[in-house]
Length: 113
Length: 112
Image (cartoon, rainbow over all chains, first blue to last red; front, side):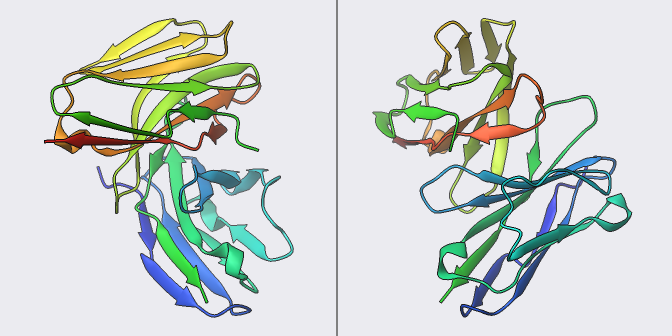
């Protein structure tokens, strides 16, 4: 079974630029999550999708972050404009129906200079 | 703010020794999970314990949960150099067990 795929793996941008991350969850997993993990900290949930609907985006900085999951499969997370404090690893995870454990992708390491 | 707090922040042991990590949390939970993160790799799920369970085993892993004290511990027996990683506890809320809140993690170093 293929795991959660994410791209790109690394991205360096200047502040005020925009960036987008892509995630392809495990086939059949209806729930998809985006997390932000700052160096030395645990992951923090940004947004949770169930199929193509948003379940929880209470911790998403909506003035600059946006996410979508068209057709209930792939998802993209966008930051526009980026700030220095957005430097982090962005993790995507998916979860099978009826279970609580989550399966994580390798992450995208974003550096904002 | 993060729900879980791991203790210790860092732990260094010799191969073959046991490693114990603790996690405390603040609100009522549905389940508690432990994840491992190696450098350069994503998070990997290790074990899940439900709020009505007190102890669970999986290979060299043993997890305990004390809901009265709002705490959990992860024991890794007969540690190996390959166990070197960061370990995170994550709690699923009572009302929404599928939404996880992660702690800050324990960095475990197993010296050969």
